[in-house]
Amino acid sequence: MESSSYNPFHVAQSQFDRVAEVLDLDQGVRELLRQPMREYQFTIPVRMDDGTIRVFKGFRIQHNDARGPAKGGIRFHPMETVDTVRALSMWMTWKCSVVDIPLGGGKGGVICDPHHLSLREQEQICRGWIRQIAKNVGPISDVPAPDVMTNGQHMLWMLDEFETIHGGRYPGFITGKPVGMGGSLGRTEATGFGVIYTLREALKVLGIDVAATTASVQGFGNVAQYAVQLYTQLGGSVVAISCWDQADKTSYTFRKKGGVSLAELRGIADKFGGIDKARARDLGYEVLAGGAWLEQEVDILIPAALENQINRDTVGKIAKSVKVIAEGANGPTTPEADDVIKQRGIFVLPDFLTNAGGVTCSYFEQVQCNTNYFWEKDEVLSKLDTRMTSAFAAVEDLARSRKLYMRDAAYMIAINRVAEAVRLRGWA
Image (cartoon, rainbow, N blue to C red; front, side, top):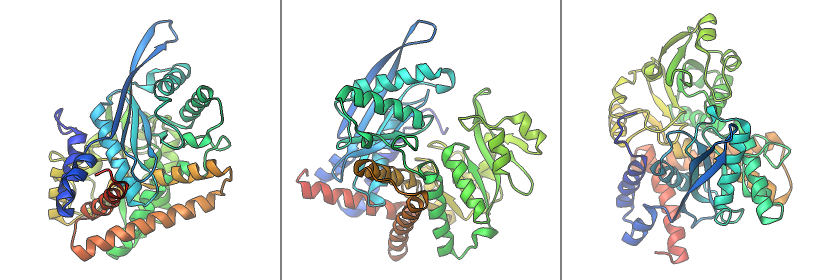
């Protein structure tokens, strides 16, 4: 982390303010869009397995729903803050807009650590979260999904509680559910694959053969694993992967000469994406400091973990060989780091474009649930590829024609669409 003073919501507002000025947005529209429309903060009492009562803090923030129901994940994280959730909800608004799906932005969370909770305790948190917010979310108002340290089982517990409270079946209320229980095929792969669909198109524009490239990845959760899978299928080589070690409360980078093996690392990783150091060394991996992923002599960096990873303190460590940064995480790069990256001429694929595959497939799941007609996996991934490729092309075309930084071009498209919806509704 850059420092304890880092505030992701201030970063999100700063990014918005810069583009709002370029777009010359009306002051009323600016005031509406630079802050969430609704915020819910609540407590969730849970009887633990040992009989004691613990009280967890929960959030749901709806940034803007001018283009459609709010959409966004629910994360379980011990370091969760309301400003993180605010920032993520704003980024979700731009994410849905830039890929042109009829949804707005929302985000939720609970301050907790699933590593230290039994499944029963996690279930009680999920059901308690719904009980506190059931009147303010729903299939036509706010549709949650999984995020950091939540999964399909968590979503199904939440759906069951929501349906129990409302006395009906509402499979379109929540996405990221298990396949067979209203979940969409391809949803597990969607975010990571979307990162690589976008990267593939960027490399075409840059005239670089993906099979001749190398990459370093931060993260080994769902997004990172599927990004690595598709990237290596296209012929690229991942030389290093960094991930969090729960036991040591720190991160490590795993590097192997000739490239890492996804199958090997999956075989020695826990369900949260933590890699066993001792077993990795036995398989011939170097175990380096967590920040070493950023210093590798590669063509591509893929931050796919948490926000604030490329900042003013770390951006100088990026190797001269790096040509592309594909942001799989939300908010991994701070504005100060962006300034340095621009000067170096590194091609940045901004987070809310690059990782929009997840929300796009969530939208597909919502559509399938609401029509009670489900698509084959190839159809889902084909539609996803088409949507991500089209969104990239629009952003890249604007960036090239106006000589803009890719992040600024993506923001201009996304914010302009939401601002237009706000104006048409007569909100500002």
